[in-house]
Amino acid sequence: MSHPYLDPSPSLPSVTARTLTTSPSSLTPPLSLSGWILRFLYNMAFQDWLITCYLSILLIASILGTGSHRAVSIRHAALDLVSLWLGLIFIRGLSGQKGRSHALIYRLLIFGVVFLSYFQLRDILPTVTSHAADGDIFALDMKLFHMEPTLLWDRFITPSTTEWFAFFYFSHFLLLATHILPFVFVSNRTSLLTHFSLGVCLVFCIGHVLYLVVPGYGPYRYLADYFTHPLEGGLFWKLVQSAVSTGGAQKDIFPSVHTAAPLFFTLFSFQYRHLHPFKYTWLIVAFFTTQIIIATMFLRWHYLIDILAGILLATISNALAKWISQWEEKRRKHLGLQSVFIPLHGLPLPLHQPSLSATHE
View (tube, rainbow, N blue to C red):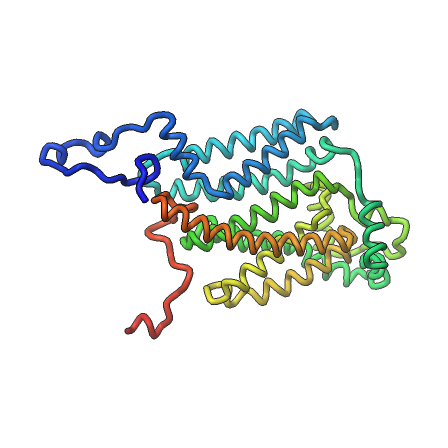
């Protein structure tokens, strides 16, 4: 399908000797404003709209909020939204060949605004509401499961067990770095990256919005009077405490994104275990994920229902990301649009590596 506003290389009339000497820019008439807007909107990816909606929700919630951090919350959300759209206009709105710089800008933009917004939730959450749903969450756990793991495991609290789970809890940030940074700076598998980035955006955007709906501090605060063994550890426990106190959003418990993100990485890695490096890493990631999930409750950050919500979020996000990314690739190919992600160099690599026997036939 070809469309003068959508196809980056529309059909041209027969070329004469006169037109061969004409500059390339004169061969294609400039688009009208309405034509440019149409091309820009068609070029927008699903994840572009997803992040736009997410940041718009943060902005509207901040405007409607009454907390003491309202002004700074509005400023943060507005700057994020403006930065996103300036970047999208640069990437999606400009025609012509796009290179490595465009590829890097878009990758940094998509992941950057989503992760930056997490640190801004420290101001946004108390601006939106002063309510904490800990009592309701704990009551729901007791009604559904008749127990709370963080209370049951209090008897196993020692400096050694605390340090063990603190190490894995902190390794959540290592998993983020080892999965996201290679995709941003190295990967040329654009189809794989489309699935991965959309899954990450779904996990974090949906998770962060639900923090606004179900805010809470966690068992460490609400159930403090029920614990008999203090959490004491070494280096990693101190690192966890420092990270939570200085960078955490404080009321970010439902769903547990600390559960959802590693589980998404596990599901994604298992799904593509026929590719390097996932054929070697998926089992390691799966083991780390199990320990991280246990750590979220052992260290008293989360209730059981938070974990189950995180598991559900990761599972749904992975399934949706795969389906939407495949639909997106087909749509863009059918309309002659640029791919969601621009290759860093050369042509994008295929998802399925040819077997050794096939390469010698």
